[in-house]
Image (cartoon, rainbow, N blue to C red):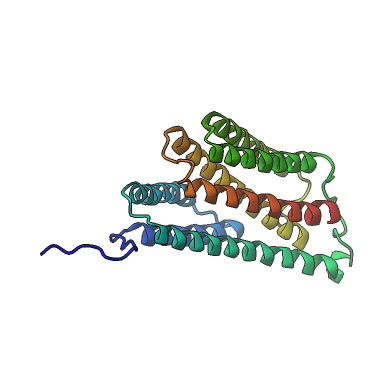
Length: 260
């Protein structure tokens, strides 16, 4: 007799990707710590591409499972809960660095001159380049929403057009952030101010890069009609992630630029 599945769950096959991703993420963390302590590790330039390759192969398998009909309503519900928990962990991650910023700025230490920003550090003008980047990111939140609404209505051309605008705006924000770092008068080693500033903005910048990559993959899948009006969970996750990036940046902008 042949066994048949009598439950709505998907029992995944054995996959090497979770283990390999764990190893590469740990290796990246160790290499990053070495770099921050002025002991550069050249393997970091091979770890990052390896992480990207493993993520691509892992997501490829997930897409294949979805195409194979394994993602039932029950499975999709579980995936959605998992992604919401992931977003919650991201919120807590940013909250920890925001707490560090508030802790350092509300009661500046004596060795900082008991002022914030510390003596000798000239903070960036929040109404110049940072404001332009904020405008781009907020505009991208609007275009991604328009893209989602167009997808629900079945308007593929408008969906792709607004998604392209979102990707371009996100890439523009990344470029402005890079330019800001190049011309910034202080570094990550310039007291706790430089540390918390670069950790907050740099961590957010990495999330913007991840979000742009996420949206680019969704664009390719939408163009190849791998998503429909009824079934586009991957795109919905990308939209949630992008809105989280928007909201977090508003808080970072107000704290690190306007108030700080």
